[in-house]
Amino acid sequence: MTCYGPKELAASFRTVRNNTIQIAEEIPEEHYGYRAAPGCRTVAETLVHIAVAPRLQEHIHLTGHLTDLSGFDFFDFVGRMAGEESVPRSKQQIVQLLREEGDRISGMLENFPDSALDERVEFPQGMVPPSKSRFEMLMAAKEHEMHHRGQLMLIERMLGITPHLTRKMHERAAAIQARRAGVKTLSAQH
Image 1 (spheres, rainbow, N blue to C red):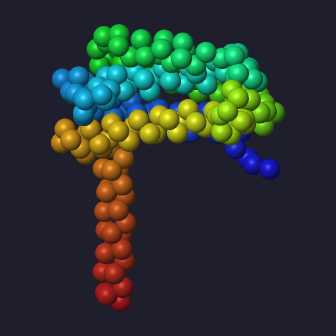
Image 2: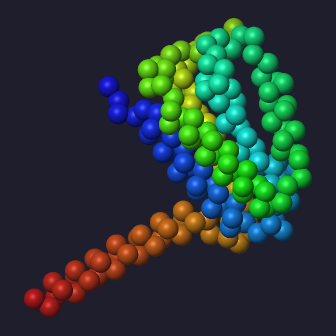
Image 3: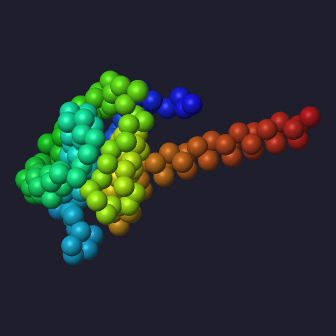
């Protein structure tokens, strides 16, 4: 028995999305057209991809409640999402899209029936594994975003920006070291 259900899924998705939004806010708009290498998405395209990609899980699990994907047209669905990535948007519009889509998806996750998380979804013949639980597939939306967020954090480094999660980690480490130094100073005085 796990205590990880729809509310925890929604909370963890919100945390991941909030970290993505912070990166989107920290990268200057003049770098939104930056492409790390030929064939890669630009910063803007990556952020829009992150914003709209959970629509696939939404369609399968939250609105369509599909149990068999053998007839599902992945290429059409992914093609429509790719079309979204190419729509010109300002930084403000992209950040707003990330917020709105994140709020919408996390709200749907939060209200997802706990009993449905164990349901199996069958994949087209030949796929390995042949099925997955809804829980595993819904977690994949967060994992997918973290994958692309890692790319954006590397791009931040390439642009001379220390990612906020790294800054926070350094701040925590410095605070721990300062406390330890304070304890050693107090011990030496006694």
